[in-house]
Image (cartoon, rainbow over all chains, first blue to last red; front, side):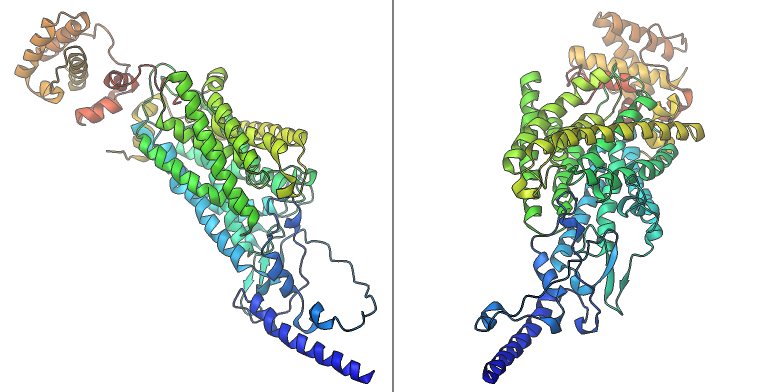
Length: 512
Length: 121
């Protein structure tokens, strides 16, 4: 008996030594010194909730879980203890509830793979706005308004960056006292930490394998591009100061609440099971609805519907669309918040849907107008990118083919027949492409979501209600904000300034 | 006499001559050189086109200092300040800046006339 005990002790000792040598090596993802760190219990990521926009990494979970086990409590592998009689069953304590707010972890809980991909994705999404959207829009307006259109997106990038760190992030991505809005806990990013001395840093409960600083930046790029999309609707006629005021208020009163509803697990729509992987509702429906209201509120440009508005340079537009396409991989695959298989699926379906939508658009164009245009190709591609956005982490390739086809069809209708029907001078078809594409994608996510990928059953009715609910909220709030801004500074430039162009009258510059 | 008015009439004559008889003229030189302008007026009248005759008559009056109100509005009313500024620009920039009507005249020879009216796509 004693001999068996000695044998067991020896095996346990050998196994413990082997694992204590192996685990830190696997877990060494930062400069932390594991022995000096007090490692808290491994949080069960809220992101594991399939409704969350930040699905759990199917790769990163392994090293994270391994590092969560204290080194001195390592259990030997089964093969080693096989000869030993089974020990008495141990009653394990129930796992701690998943965190519902940002929290601090040790450096060793951070996945370097996820972090690297999210840093890359962040840069890609920022690339979509500057210079992607800048070029895309600047190429489509008249020569006298090129600089102002380009500058508006650039200015929004700066403006929203400040708003996001001061207030927006806190309102969008912290749990609040109601499901409608987050708290003020993270104002000025209060509580966001990175402390080298203790090897601790903060993470979001939505993305527990990457530093919170990276998550803040990634979400900031979404907060930037959404209002920048609206610029296309009121192009060539809005006063620059009015635009800055409108965008500031819109970011706080429209974007942040809607992001909270959809992406914060305790938010109004996320808690009901609404699926929006990368922002079909938050970004595209939201911006599309706001764009349409802006177009109505500002009125048509002088000569609209009577004379042609010759685009300045459609090569800019194609280059911009190409940058948008490439950047969209960060947008959609980055929304997995992990370098994993789901991100790979999101990237694949993004490419497929985009190509199908572009081909569908030009097919319709050829059928109706007997011409294939470059603007048609670029528009179709963007339509496909928009529509696959909410579905990208939920659908398979068949779903992507169907969504691409529907996007090309409906967005073409949105930018032509529906535009004429609505009668608004939505200058660059923000509602026709982003609004309609977002609706198509959000609703079809309810049809084509594949449980094998997402682990959830989608609800078509819920998706539809959420999509139209967001549309209505965004439209009403935009109307209120525009009315307020109009009272203070006036939304529209006067006729003389419009004739001379915004470049000269608003910025005293011009394209030669 | 307004230099800007002269330039606008000269630009429209240039567009019509190019489109109807495929003849290209130097609009800027036409504004600066009266002899060249008179020769262009003569060529314009030889075409026996109603609109071209009107513009030729108007240009002749502007050259001889007998300016009178434009018989037919050729472009939308443009604020004086803007026109003074744009008159300093070269003719190509002016054509782009002077307003959508001029752009239409300039470009619809190459484009479908209905293209880009009321929508890009």
